[in-house]
Amino acid sequence: MSTKVTKEEALEYHKLPNPGKVAIATTTVLQTQRDLSLAYTPGVAFPCEEIKENPEAAYDYTSKRNLVAVISNGTAVLGLGNIGALASKPVMEGKAVLFKKFAAVDSFDIEVDETDIDKFCEIVKAISPTFGGINLEDIKAPECFEIEKRLVEELNIPVMHDDQHGTAIITTAALMNASEMMNKKVEDMKVVVIGAGAAAIACSTMYKELGVKNLIMTDSKGVIHKGRNDLNKYKKDFMCDEDLTLLEAFRDADMVLGLSKPGSFSTEHIAVMAEEPIIFALANPTPEVFPDEIKAIRPKAIVGTGRSDFPNQVNNVLGFPFIFRGALDVQTRKINMTMKMAAARAIANLAKQEIPSELKSITGDLSFGREYIIPVPFDKRLMVEVSSAVAASAVETGVARIKEFNLEKYREKLSKMV
Image 1 (cartoon, rainbow, N blue to C red):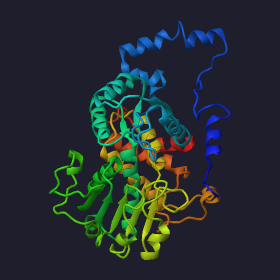
Image 2: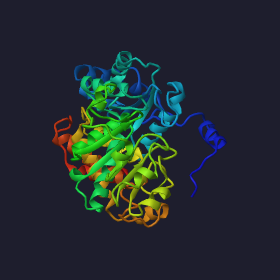
Image 3: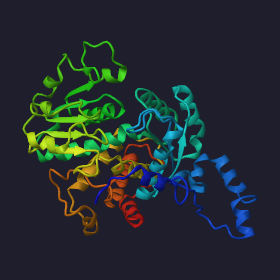
Image 4: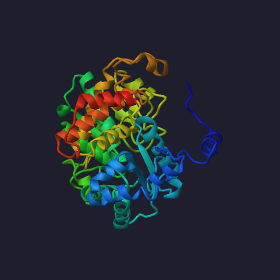
């Protein structure tokens, strides 16, 4: 089935039957005078007083326990660049829709017209009591690193910049399965990362956590190495010892992660890689190199892109809705690396399980292999597997407010939600 859409179709979709993609729905009955008295004055005073005495009671009496803010300043919108806060709103509304449809998480999209780091953080901190979690989105590097760091440290609810960690978690899951399939230990692999923005830095950080030791990162000026004096502090964490040409960086590499633009590497570079390389060409909508070009040179390559019309789509929707689902359900204060790694392992493991019959009608008869190393977005088991792994990890690492946690009962609850 074709996924191509025209401009006219997209504009009509966003305009009709009502402008935009989200609305607010009530969760309580409001039909009588008594209902009104309970919902508003005088009855509403009682939960207000409870929360004043015990702020944690907000999780019992308000929507906070299931509410995420999708917050952006529109400085790095995927494929569009710095288009500003207002123009980013359709994307943020879309993110809110994905939260709701995939994981039953309510969310408000909030577009903040501010690029100053201090002011942006002050605004987010000021509105944070409303929410149980904050999903930062489409904020450009390097500002996004400092913004996320500050908010994670200063707020007592989970904060995650999905452009960074969503991509990192999904590609880490894909790397886990691809390396296993090729019988390669990650600590022995040579990995090249094309790009040094938010996602590239986060992916590289997670790969190192996984065990990758030999990692070469490039930016628009070439390989990031110790002889350069134009690197920000985030890039400096990935300096290699010597200056290399791009071709030298690719020689005998086991994996390349492309988070750049079309043509930033080519078949010439792929030709000097290992015989069975892992190639994630994630520039979107046009990958750095198309899968058929890669296969012509390295037939045994495992290839992933960001597109839905090729196998192994790296799509952040495999992660963020279910990560926040698990984080919200145990009222976690943070989303730490252990939780992210647990999410990656859950995603990787799900790809090894047999596809349910109802999913085959959408995807065909997929099975674990070179063209199926990560689940597809519409696999409903993702909520059970990923959310439960994240929730359990939060409890184990001591960042959850919920202390009495029964994993099997929680998995059963998620199954019923699905």
